[in-house]
View 1: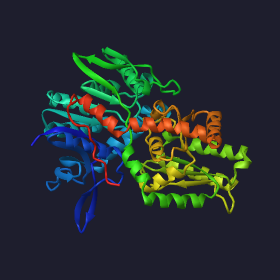
View 2 (view 1 turned 45 degrees about the vertical axis):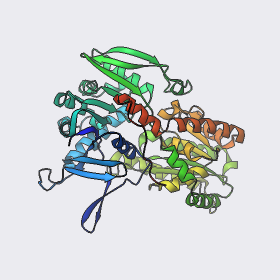
View 3 (view 1 turned 60 degrees about the vertical axis):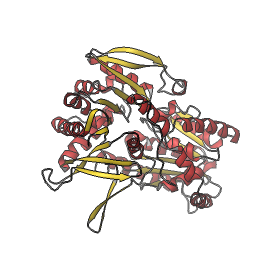
Length: 501
């Protein structure tokens, strides 16, 4: 049976575990991520399908299961798995996507590496995704494509299946035209995205950047421009916009543009925050801290996340404020997402050296200034750390959204805590009550963390109340409703299945 909704995403929607020689498909360990949210849409359509890749030694092996059926709490759906060789995965994902596209998307032209890109392989993989989606889609189905490593899928799919409705959601920033146009394949990418019916981004700035890039190369007309909604038009963030195009036309085809920030599952986080298990963990953390204030930073090991700049600011803080020594601790969680890439290994080494230097300079037998955690923290434990943290210090140099800061606010059911947030994170457009800072400025970073540590309880609670209101309103269900409306399926129910606590 063909599918009414086909989700095209590079990751499979489960984890494969071998038990007694057999493969079992289990729920993803992180119940708060984007994958469970996407799967929740299957319950609103008669039949759903997911298209992803799976590494295979021999893609032509007839025993490779290309399509499997999954039946879980989100419904019954099929998963089309594209067999890619290790070389294809490396070329398509690690080289083209991470070494060429990733730095450009985040504005790091100096890290852009064009030479090793194998564009024919990128096209080949994207074509395979498009073919699989075309084979799964029913007449007039919605095909929902996700993220920049599948940029060419919409253009190919439009040729294969002109009847389907194509929606694309961009999970990263979209840079200004002068940055994006560094890519030699810029026109091909833009033409593919303009083959969509809907193109979605987190915030209005990324929509405007996309339109500017498209109009710099192609005959694109803006049919409609609207004033940005008040909740996304904060004038305190570097990423603020006051108006945004919502309708384009290109080659006789109309495209809807959408600014819709991804949120977190607030209901689920608050349930975890209220469990006895979390209370026990929280008590352990507070006992270990003693009278010291806890600063918490959580992110991936990536040059875009500003980990080096943050540790340098912490070192300057301890250098200039001897009175804080022994009275404050930084828990810096930095987990490698791509362990096989040299760039990320270098960042990890730099973080370890800097953390070691700080502990060597200021630490004592009784007090360690910084704890650098390079392993993932279980989400249930992380909730307790959120609750224990006097300050959440989230200062990426560039970030499409950043959900950690939203998780922190959702977990603070006690209404306390301070969020220090980079104004270059997409979330800063929504969370204007945070202590916003510029991670490129030593003075701004140092003054922000200093102010957070001495902020009055009245100010802390007033800011947190406003941020919790925004995070609760713009939760994952809010995003889901926006997507449903963009699909043109307004009559479908908008209800997410939350994992059991």
